[in-house]
Image (cartoon, rainbow, N blue to C red; front, side, top):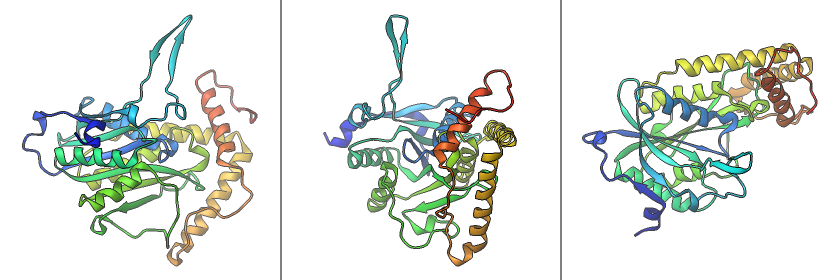
Length: 315
């Protein structure tokens, strides 16, 4: 038995896929490429909504072989005098259906901490077993961009024919690797088409749920995978969060000033984009995303209780 076979258990008989061709696999891994929990929120929406009804798990990865429990400790419940529940991490492939009944696969769960190459081979086993024709990855990264501007999306693929539009990036960028990025590289070497979309999340919102980025990602998935996804609830969730942010800015002039500076910076780059400028932030004395994010967290936490208007800036 191969190492990849031991790493993933694939359901042998899936009647729902009998006769299905042109099957798509959507991938979103929690962790490094999930600023604003954009991928996690998108996955939750896909699982909980639409015609799938939660779907059917058709493949399960052995998380014990991939997860660093000391680096990312799963939550447990301690009730009075005993441990009662353990939220075990799960990395699975679900068979879902879109709003029109079209089947597709969704691989979601924590990004593997170790054994990336073995993980890639295991995903290839899933792709071969279910005759997947296209893999679509989604993710998000924190960027020094304002939330008041359109969500920028970086589109990438291991097959140039899959790319639509021109990339805003120029030259080569050296970036930290991820299991999801390595998977796209390996699939290209093995002759399997894979593409992906990365949303640019405002750095000061990267630690919060930011459903607007999730919405933008799923709109791109719809087009690439030729699926019909009911995005109504997610759109309402995004609008609610934008309203919360607007109320916070109205009561905090300092943070509102920072956002205004980011708007000016963004617009300057946008005007120069045709000349090759990027959307990366310049070296300017702006508060860190962590500082701003902490203030937003305090504000949003206060929404759960009585409305007290302005929230304080101290931790």
